[in-house]
Length: 296
Image (cartoon, rainbow, N blue to C red; front, side):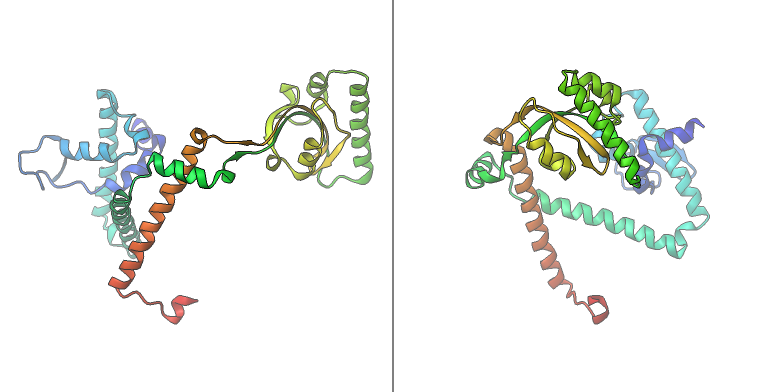
């Protein structure tokens, strides 16, 4: 079972599945290769191993730094290649469906590598570019108005009958009466709220913007002053009692805070423009035309 765990742990089989074609011993290497594993007429060399390690995304590559971790990765390579070798021996790669999937996988890898070369030529976004964009688009970079609130939810079923809704509303009103008499909101939330996410925290929801909550809840919460408690508010979930504990006005983001968003936006726009231009060029080069059937 250890081998199966190695093969499938962390989803790494997906990363290895595109690297199953192990070169024959000594193939493509000028100097005598350092062989790590032999499997019949094929082998995994040090160069093969290093190439596959380098091809992993950084978050996976960092898992295989120690000698023990590298040995584990080598075992995973062996397992993946053994399975692929047996599949080829059974001529599974010649099946019509499998052949199409293999072609798709190869095309996908080639397309990604070619696209990477295109993106590598895209001009880098500089700090001056970011500052210029920020200066002309400040309205895009504001932190919205936010409130911090506690709530007590008295839950209702989506298909609740009128008499059930009436009982639930009456319970919410009784809790509101307790609050009016000076009861602690947090303690009542811990005792009565049906919201498992906030109940243990005294009903605390933290800060949120208008679009984070259902409309009925947001409308009521943002109409309250700091320290004020709402009347029972009906939503899809039931009846809420809401207490606003703090507020933040909408604020303009400064350049430092806005920079990551601007950089990402500009990089994506430049990459898209580069890809669109290249696709346009390739369509002309390969004379791409859509038939009537292809236009449907």
